[in-house]
Image (cartoon, rainbow, N blue to C red; front, side, top):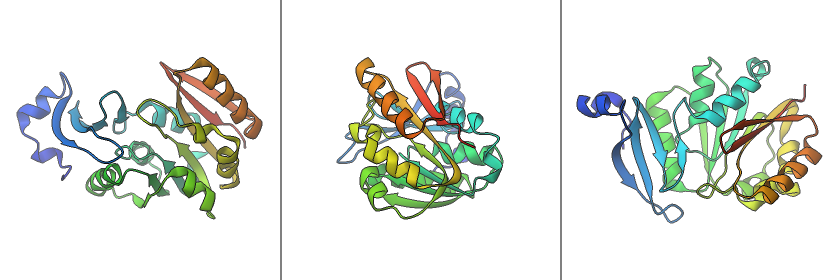
Length: 222
């Protein structure tokens, strides 16, 4: 699919300012239902019960970048785990920053859609990696100035993403002074409490920003 807003019929573009407009369906082994939508002139990616991307208006990405604004001018490399349509890339670029991005996504269809969109919509330098985030971090030898964790199975954060092992690997993959942001959706209060405890043990200096059912954990280390 070519993501070119000028090729969308004018009536659909106008209608998108009233409600999401369906453009096409995709499916994969991992996601049996993926919908590409147009809403308020921006492309979205959704499953049956979750919004995976909302362009430069994606709240978790916006929250993370705003919270880390004093650090962003020095950010030269960003690792994003969970592609969507590359909302984090769009947010960072729209704010005027130009780091290199590594985009890790287990679903090859989602990754293809993200790269199709980003290639058409931005001049960002993006390295796509089709891999499970757990496997990627286990083998990773690179360092990043910013890591954004946006990993979901529908609306649920997989258990490995809040494990001591995974978060320690993330910490070890940060450059000195690097920061991390983690998007979490609360479905179970007990799991959320444990996730906070584990995160705090590895990243003592952090804050939690609430946005509806989302919790964005952002490190505050200088």
